[in-house]
Length: 371
Image (cartoon, rainbow, N blue to C red; front, side, top):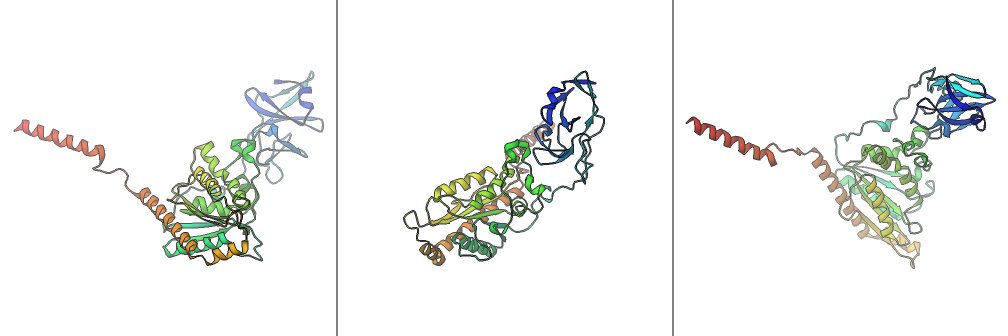
């Protein structure tokens, strides 16, 4: 048996981290009884000693998986998801554990999340997703200047032969980012931890569109207090899991994706809003066409919203701008796809041509000698 030390080290709190030989373990002290389990959660390797108790179950601090504090079995219904358990003995005021666990780690059957599938672009035309970040009462909608230009843009994409869809964030029910990355870089997973745990969270529709479906991502936002809308920030904070895959796993989820933006509002600060959007979508791996956004603003001293709405409602210039933006984005997406499918290594190009000349010269010299 291995001596973990005086029992007083483990009675002050219900969960205490320790080392058994070379293994990280969690010592539990619940209702006057000790238990020792592996300190590593089955799901994503979270540190169980940093969790908390829910009755007799340890709750992992990363994604809330639960294990019985003495048996190591998963919570009711998930008993097969177990962590190894060690034998425990108290002797001479010290806590002793077996040098090796007496049970094995168990893994229940968990089908992979649909978003976790391999990213492969299906054959077909260019695909454009428009994402509306305007918040409103969807049962009593109002006219939205950014939504109107997005509508024009998506409609025009169809005339170019592209497949197109619009996702209004206001119609989706999804939770705000809950800071899993702040717990540990590896606690932020792909698919998003919230998406994996909460089947009612509807941001999976955005993930599906931008990661697996779209070639062009067209985001429309109003200007709110000099910034993009609150719904926009709620979305991109949840999209942090896409960027974090690059950081922690060198895994780029977005390839050959083109992003463009529509920005309108009663207040100014267009460049700052565009700058944030460009910066974020660059970080997740998107590329941009020349002149990647269109914008409209009445400015700080002209917050006459009725006039602002009327201007956009009747502006053919803004509509033409939206169509031209889609033209640029679709053209660039097509160039990227053409490049992806092109034979990048040419049979007679570059150094191969040089080698070919040498081979012909060698044959000529050999033939001359034979003659």
